[in-house]
Image (spheres, rainbow, N blue to C red):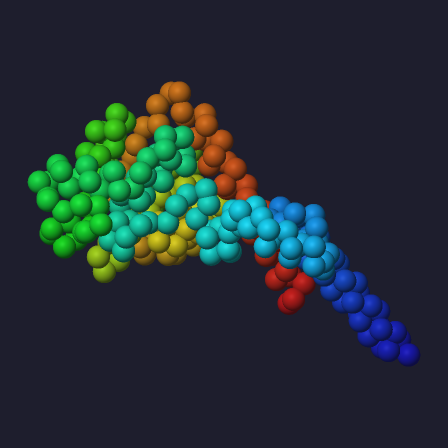
Length: 251
């Protein structure tokens, strides 16, 4: 009887845990739905469909989950333009200086003497170099320099100065990303091709080349830059805690 009672109590506890999880998921889904759609959309109503057909412009700002991974940044426009996209996002998102990716591409092409426009890759057949990004940042009025810093120094710099930097990952053709900050041992990066994501420490050690572009936001922008970094890190920390709780319940 004691064994049967223990099994029953265990089953009751599991049911309560599942019920709590479902309630949390329902609450999260409801908040997301309220943020993305008008109140009428929370119930099944033909009037909502009629509103959509009469006023489609009201719903143009709804974004997919894939698109939301890039917010508040923007995906690179071309397959080969991760470098200019990284610099444009660094200046736009973190420094508060709206910058067009194609403008950086064209500026770099003019400096090299290329005759191609923004729609075509550099004549060398390769994407932008770190030197080209350095020159572009300086031409836009920012103090910038290229450093060689390993993964450990990168993590220390991100924690101390809270200013994102652009780094080159070891890929078949190289790939530029923005290193933003630390989230419980992982490194938050903005990948112009994939959006914001966490890079585990082992991957950082394996893939971080060390070649790093550091751009100074200036005294007038440093506080806003730090606030943006803190907000993004906080959001990913909340997400990580939520996923950890899900894992604990499932296992």
